[in-house]
Image (cartoon, rainbow, N blue to C red):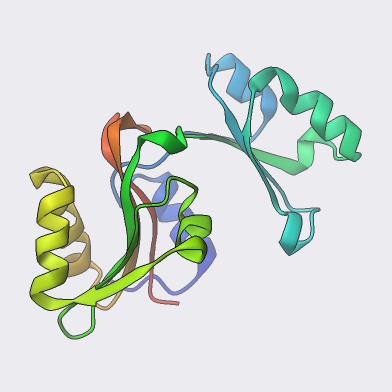
Length: 178
């Protein structure tokens, strides 16, 4: 199967087709009703590309911050914000034609971590790095995704502790062919 658009990928992520993802809510009220009390990652479709997100916002500061910025909470989507200090390894993996891995140990959101410091490897070296840092079931799941979505790039983070909807250390951020 091919994942050819961001919209398709988001639907598949929400449906659980890629495995463990972080919790998300369409509204602030849904998040509060779900009993979430951790830090929040906020995205608004009204912000420019350079200011499209707020990371690690304490729950009690979300609404005041949005109000200060003049952003309606109804234009935002809210996400569980896993603790950065729990990130073990993260990156992008694909078969091209052998396994190719771009990764980082920087404890920051994936895109920020890869911008700050990234390493690129392939083949036996990539496999050795993954075997060293990922739990066996995490590695099996990444391999499953790469086989099922042949030619796709998979974005992932392996955390020290369980995170996300399935409370598993491996979180999948994207699976894409675009």
